[in-house]
Amino acid sequence: MARLDLDDLPPRIAALLAGLAEGEELLLVQHGAVVARLTAGPAEAAAPEPAPLSPEQHADEVFENFRAAIEDEF
Image (cartoon, rainbow, N blue to C red; front, side, top):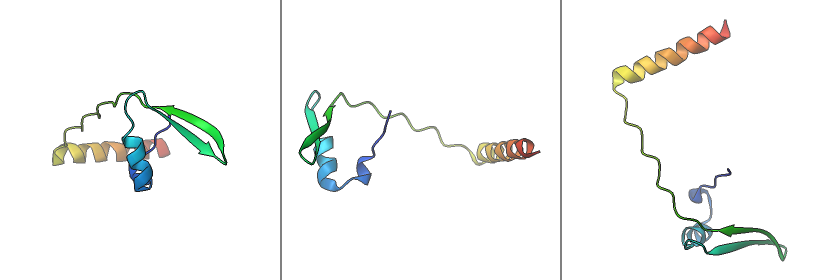
């Protein structure tokens, strides 16, 4: 599925997209021709942020990634 970050869009377009009610349609038009029709669905809950790693866990993860990369290289 394609993903579009509203922060990357001009504010007016981002506000239009964010303000669509569930079931409301938006036509995308280029040179007078309809190129796409978007229908707003229910907003999905954001995925929970993973718990931050302790410094020891972070160091272990970095070391493991480094070791795996070295093994893949040789």
